[in-house]
Image (tube, rainbow, N blue to C red; front, side, top):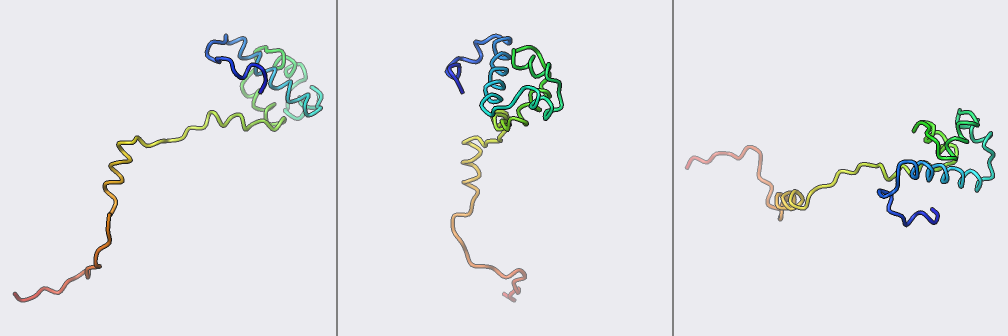
Amino acid sequence: MNELSYKNWSAMSDKALIEQFGAFVKHHRLRQNKTQQSVAEEAGISRSTLSLLERGETVTILTFIQVLRVLDQLHIMDVFRIEESISPIALAKLEKEKRQRAGKQRPENPEKSEW
């Protein structure tokens, strides 16, 4: 992203994180050569709300998402995707239960012999 991408995010204050969000929005808005007014209108927010976001002031997460959508930056939400993973032990158990070889097909109703 920029020079802060190497920092330890958990060591940053909440205010510093919000300022980084604002810097991200401003950077991508300027890269796309869009005015605050045009982005705000597309996002359905006021220009002053976008200005607050870019300055690192508190805005709602909905506002942030609306602006990301306008700037075509929703891909950053991928970090919040929840993917179920299977433990190695459970995977080993499933592998053990798999058939290892094929056998002859047996008739469903075998005829009983008189023996």
